[in-house]
Length: 149
Image (cartoon, rainbow, N blue to C red; front, side):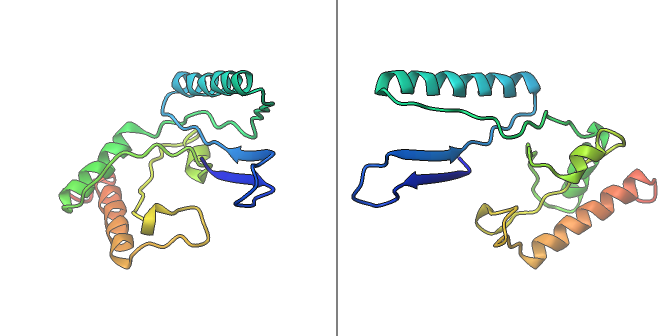
């Protein structure tokens, strides 16, 4: 759930209209399409059961873009070598790297943000997390260049 707008937005009035956004993400296109179909079916069931009109509009579609496996492995290895924890993240956001990955070997390094908020004007990361991310990137790049053991 990305956003929720309730009209008339009063705590003591049953809303007559609700607008919301849903962001579906998956590493596999078939799974993403299944999720989309399930969302549409659920909306149809709810609309029929409650006598509501539900209009689902697709705003944008980003097909999953896998990153270069050996680069991703290099980032995982660099994090482990530096003693940092790591986890794979499925990012459906329109990062420049998604488009670059269609043309060249690509991977990304993410760092934790305060309260998990990212891609937002209040995004905040601790300096030590930024330093760790930079060190992971540097070590992965040095390994890829054959400079680091």
